[in-house]
Image (cartoon, rainbow, N blue to C red):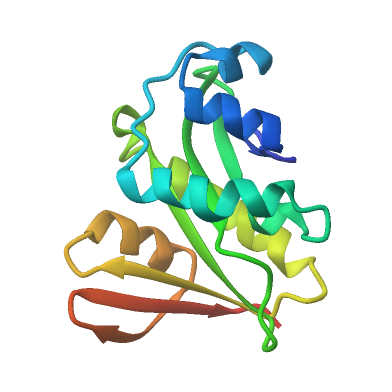
Length: 168
């Protein structure tokens, strides 16, 4: 768990992921939080079923690199989004990051702060040397978060922009 004055980033266990998917507010009850309206996109739903849940369940994998980390706003006492890595560091020590903020909490700096905290956590991991991210060209809010956290634009393919930050 990562915590600061305003946020808690909590990696979800396999059982907690099942509650997250069920979306019946049982996860909020477990964390003693107020209910939150989540919007699980089809791509996230697919990733949960195909890769996230099986990898988190696999005891040979470091689940911190495979699970969703829920982002909790302490002042609101609510889950406000999630952040995750897309697997463990590759041979070059690179990991990919993805994130999403629930609509009513957008534009308040929460995700910029959460990405910054996860970068700090990643810097402390011996195998992690850089973090990669991809955004669509029209998602200004998403790539603004990366720019504010010192990611550099490294390329583009079709409507996707690629970003990277070197940690070591």
